[in-house]
Image (cartoon, rainbow, N blue to C red; front, side, top):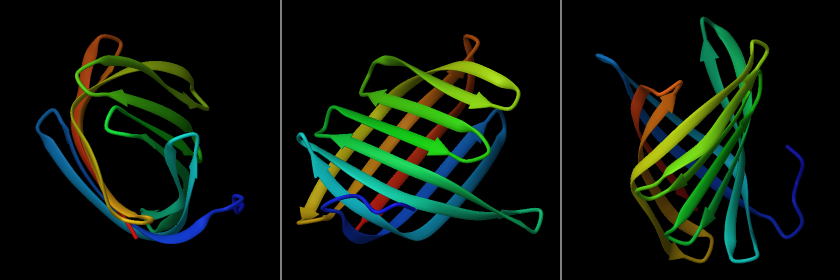
Length: 146
């Protein structure tokens, strides 16, 4: 991952609980990343490394936190997903893959960011994800950094 100007090295701990129809999956990662601040927003960059069917996959993740009002998560790997969140609002988002582009809608039902200390905090985000006017799933995402 390319280092950003004025970036501070941090440990990033994420937990994701995904419920799609009757299937619930949980994922947890701990990675080293970077934090930098720009124009009143906090940016957190890290490489998410996971194993699927004994193959290792790496995805670049950029999280932009703007106060208590909005969050944007960009995931770039085999596909590119850009999710935007504003509490209580339907927000256009997108997924680009080798199969083409898909328009998505996010609806954040909980969005809370707490800065505990300088360059340390927690982000909690619960959201519904829609594609083609259908509910894809309900998600709970927690990111802690220090």
